[in-house]
Image 1: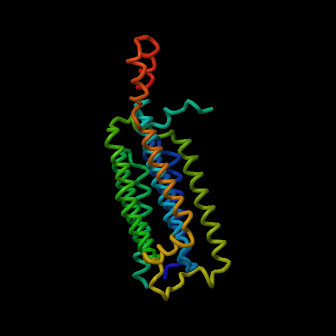
Image 2 (image 1 turned 90 degrees about the vertical axis):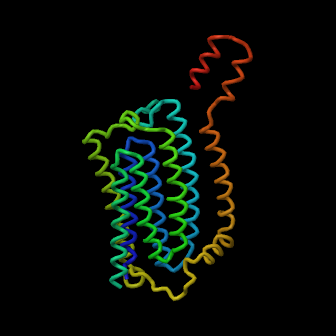
Length: 100
Length: 198
């Protein structure tokens, strides 16, 4: 059988890739997608722990996280649309009014 | 036994490959498609871990709904030029970002190795399941409607507020714009608000 730590390593790798995406992407949509990827990597770890402990509570948590991801995507994309309408760009380097 | 391992390796590679390609694509549509590829790999991992229903939900809800929403927004914004999408950051700052992410990865894998290594004889390997009900729709639903009933119901409130919030945020401000115009032709003030809104 595949050890549980292998799944966790995959989850951690996906989380790290999502971090890279959040840090390096200048595109607001790709940034939102990277956040989704990080949420999914947390889901993978929840499922893996749920299997290894033989407790199904992790599945319920994954459902809640999926719901939050959906809500976040909807609100985030609405904000992207509003930003694009006002500034004609989704390059996050252009949104620097509050930058110190 | 080795088939298990082969499925795991292939789907893990697909998931990581899709995620890596996603963040390096210039074209956001290709980015979305690579994220879908990564999600398919993750769904296979879910199924392998006994969470068949959650894996199906991941495909249906994520690839079917959320990422289609992303595609819809990309299509609506009609992004073309690199001025819209942004230039890549300079190499020095990019190196720092890769370094920070590598640190996060190493730190988390170190934690996993240490914490699982302690009880390696009991919990490192996957427990072979005797019951078929693990991960089935029925058992997930039983859990959601008994022990996690209140969080589950609060989720609906969260979704409702997200819907209302998204509609309010993305709404064109025409109704706020219109009243000053027919009121009276004050001139500079109303015109200025119009320009600000657009």
